Image (tube, rainbow, N blue to C red; front, side):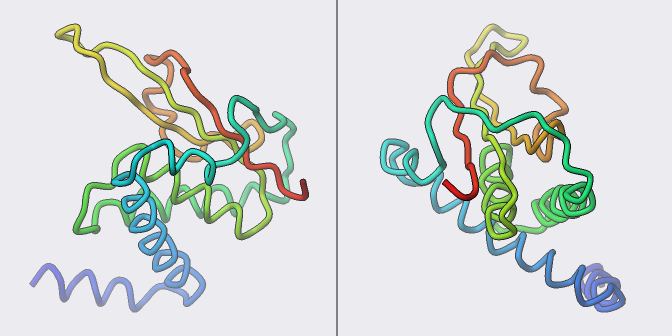
Length: 151
């Protein structure tokens, strides 16, 4: 019953929103595939290691950043696989790359409440955080990958 309701809700969306959600679903799958591979093989596909894109705000990108962030977060709840921080960050990065929008993916480590090492990933474009911003301040950056368009 829930599935039918969700499909009806999806069918009522504008086709642009439907396509964006389907694209997010696809790239979440791609991100999950990359996460399952050895990181040494994946890292070169993420961008320039230990480089960052500019913090310059581009108001024309704002609606797309917001829409991609929403689509990735929304669709991550409906995947058949784990779609947590790194998978979301990769998916959003690839979606921005398709639209020729620069971004930086951050990898961080920290400790949980029991003192165990934990990791987190988040994505920034300009001064806006697209994914993972809710807990990024609890982590120390150990790696970053910039995706600069046009280089």
